[in-house]
Length: 548
Image (cartoon, rainbow, N blue to C red; front, side):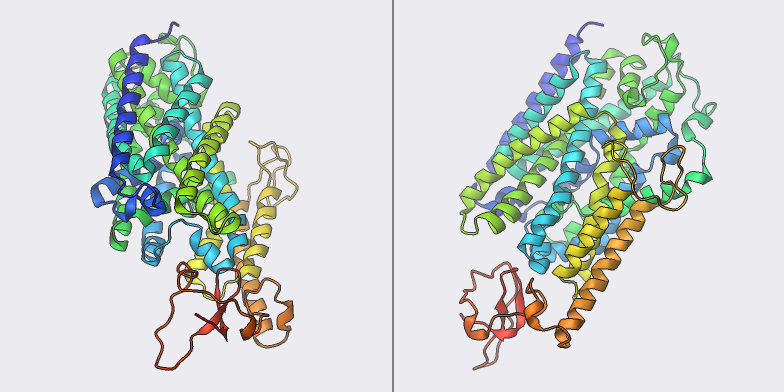
């Protein structure tokens, strides 16, 4: 098969349009030296653009390719990501979006560092970063597979070029560029995929999907019901603690808008997954040996590009390819911006150089975009399973970050002792279950473990998450009780998060500007002194006086 020059020209034109829109949108930044303007578009994202960018962020290459792969390989009953992430957006909008937006945070990690301290926030950055990188690599891998099938060009080259373009306009435009390109990209996804469906349905080599429903609906295996439940909860609750989601929540004009964006995007994800489901069903209903492909479609990860290439006219397949490109770009740019935003603010600014100027932070953010893009591109080239990455990218976020997010938003007595203990308990229990993609063997045999298949049938991810949550609550409550009741002397509060070892006269003098991101100063009566002391963890302890 020769290079598809018509398709290649079409892709070049599409990339040119996206690049032009991204650079044009960057001109909307009012203050290019303002961290908030670049990271959050000045908190000025309206409903129309907001709905498009929230939906397009989730409907990426991993989403549409992975859904078609799962339907073709295991059946619709096991394709959980579409409804799982849709529910995740709705749950996030109901319980987290309003509280986070009203608090005025800049990144998802801000409340963690405010409550648990800067260093603990730095530790929580690691699972958040791994989630963003795995997500980016999954969607870049999806694009490479599509290019290799439809255009017959090198997979590695296509992944590298696509990542470079996404990095380029994100470097200059921040969230404005990402959001405005998302409007075009989501429109292209809808047009390209829906347009291909009627042509694929009417192809002479495709049987009626009603006659092959046993192949694409899949069959229920009660023995693996624990796995199904595990992934269901993982996708719903593990889909919430993502910077890529909260970046849009925090950029909304109002807290109410943030909730509406979440609800609408949840419905949008369900609608946009329909063509991918149908493509997976059509792939399972096709006599591939009778097509120009000439052999059985044994690699389910390629089923979407195969349907576009061999079951639709060339012009339609090129438009469909544009849809896949759009899906990849809409998610890759968002993840790169999210990872770099967290690093530049929560790691570099708050841990490494507290006195760094906003201009310096923005340059660090741009460098971080390049590094994150390089790592995601490397993972996309070296790891094979798209749908495996699609699930793996939520594992550590679900087990480690979700319990922590729940507690910083809703549990007043949660503290750093509980946070750090829960972190390692969750990590140990999750890694103990093994991970096939990473070649990690199980060293914890959970109930119903299948020795023959080396398979965990118990929902160990959800168990790990619940144990992490329980640990955080119990250790936080216990340490608070022990210190506040004098059972343990305050000298043993080494993390300074329950009591404070400093005497009031030893407390550092701080200004309102120093704690502008930490705590609101209560209104005081005439002659009354404010109580509390800054303890180095980014928190104010109500046990001592504070000087201004």
